[in-house]
Length: 421
Length: 167
Image (cartoon, rainbow over all chains, first blue to last red; front, top):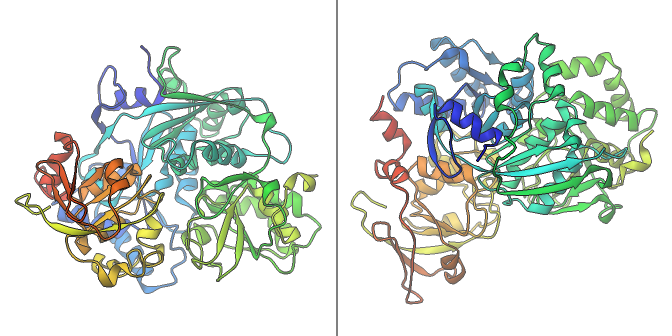
C-alpha cells in the first residue's frame, strides 16, 4: 500500500519508513512563522516553559502584518516585544512592513516542497501550494516548537480533489475553492488533508494554487497540498533552486489510499459567492445578483496578489466605480504593491475611485474599513463570520477578484463574466 | 477538572453549529494584555447574557464544527479562565481541539449528549469514569476516555507544564 504526499512528508520528518493515517508522530519542523498579533504570547509561554534558547534562530520568521502600521499603543508594544526577543535570540528574519505573512513566506524564500512549516495563523495551510506540509497552531504549541524544534501530529487521512479541464473566462481559482467548500461543507475535511491534483491544477499558476490551499482550513482541513510539477519547478528556478530532490515525496504513490475522491470539470464552473455568515453557504453568483453593496474589498492572503490586481484593473480600466460604494484595495506585499504601480494598475484603481492601502492584512484583520449596521460588502478574503469586518448586523459575501471588481462598478453583486474584456 | 478529578455540577450553555473563534472572542479584544481582560468579552456578540451569568463549573454545549476559524488560542483560554469545565460538541475544528488540549481544557465529542442536553440543564461530569450525568433530565451519557497520549498533557495542566518538565 502506497502513501500520499502528506504521509510521505510526515514519515520523512519523523524518521519513519512509513506512516499511516490516525497514527501519532513527533515530527521535526523546518520553519516557523509567527505574526505580530500572537508574537508576545508565544514569547511569554516560551519563557514560562523555562527555555533559554531558540532551537534554531535561522528557522524562525517573525512577520508584522495584522497590526501594521500600529494604530494603538498595544500594537506598538507587540512590535517592541518581538524586536527585543528577536534581538536576544539572534533571530534576523523579522519583517516589519513587507506585507501579509503568507505572501512574505514564499516571497522571501522560506517555503520549500517537502518542508514542515508551522505558523500562528490558521491560513498557514497556504504553503501547501508549494508542496509543503503546513498548518496553523496556537501560541503555546509555537512556544514549545521554539524550544524543541518538534511538534506532535496525528497523520491525517487524505481527500483527493481531481480537477480537470480549463477555467472559462471570468471564472478563477477562488471560484474553484468556494465551489468545493460549498459541496463538502465547512467541516467536510476536518482534520484531513485536502490534496488537489489533475490536469486542471497543472494549468494553474502558483498564485492561483495559493488561493486554493489558503482556504483548505475553511473546510476544516489540517492542510491543503498540491503535487510539485513543472509550474512549481519554474517558480523555484527563479531563485536558482532545484526541486529535483523533492520528487520522491512530492506526489502520491499510484497505490496511495485516500479517504475519498471528488472530481471537478473546471470548464463547467461558474462564478461562486459565499453568503453570510458561514464560508460554506456557497451559491452561484447569479442567485444573489442584484444585492446592493456598500463596500467592496480586494486583498488578503487569499486574493491580494498581482494577478488579482490585474484582473480588477482590467475590469475597471476607464470606468468609475459606483459612487455609493467604497472600494478598498490592499496589495498582499510590498513587492506586489511596487509591481502594481510599475504596471499602472494602482493608477487605474485610484482613477476609478478606489482606496489603495499599504500592504498587510488590513480589513480582513478588522483594520481600516469596517462596515456599519445594515451594510453589505463583497470581499475577496476568506471569512465572512458575523462581526469579523464590522457590525454584527452587517453582511459579508465572499467572491473572486473579478466578482469584487465588477460589483464595485455596478454597486450590486454581479456576475463578472459580462465585464471581462 | 480539578487536580483530584473530582466531579462538579454546572449549567449547560448551548450554542449552534460552526461556532467560530471570532464568536468566542472577537478579534478586537486580541490586543488586550491579559486573558482576564479578554475574558470579559467572551461570546458577547452572540450571547450577551453569557458573561453576566456564567458560573465556574458551567459547560458549553456546541454542535458540529465547534471552534472553527482562526488559530487564536485565546478562544479556549478565555473559556478556561471563566471556569468552563468542558466543551461538549458533535465535532470540533482541529486547531481549537489541539489548543484546548494544550491548555488543559478537556473537550468531549459526543453527538448524542449534544442532542439530549437542553439549555440550562444541570450537568455533572466524571472524566475519570467517562460519564456525563444530566441531573435535570435524570440521564447519563458515556464517552470514551482520551488517548493516553493526550491525557498525559491534560493531566499536568497543559503543554506549558508538559514542556517545562522537559526543558
